[in-house]
Length: 179
Image (cartoon, rainbow, N blue to C red; front, side, top):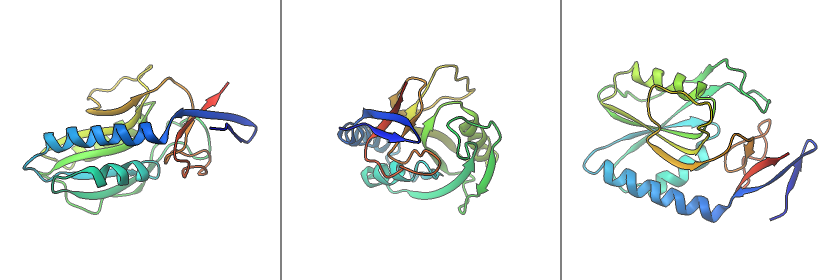
């Protein structure tokens, strides 16, 4: 696949569409086993995780529900501002429910920590996290990331829901910034 150029930055394919599909299928198999005879609520973190959540959700065979939450910490930058804004709250009641947060990427941990605390404050019966991409370098959380698609190095990525200034989410593969 050809590299793409965005604002003078060169991006190359890091994870192909086929690799993503295969890994999502495996994650769904594990979640289906773990939630057999339960009805989890998937909470997709907008905007980035909507593609991952849709593809994962189609592979889930247990009875389940989906809702969305939206936070912002990046704006149009390639790095997190560190300030989290809640832009869309949950529409469903999650008290006493099994909840699975669906995230596109866990990198600084700032957003997932905010969302984790928000969900925990609503007293779910259980809370787990599934992420497509996981950057564990320098990441310190007081809770586990339960289901991980791919561990990646600490580099800027885009595609498959991840954006660059709100653009290029529609790329079918994951691209990494080539330095």
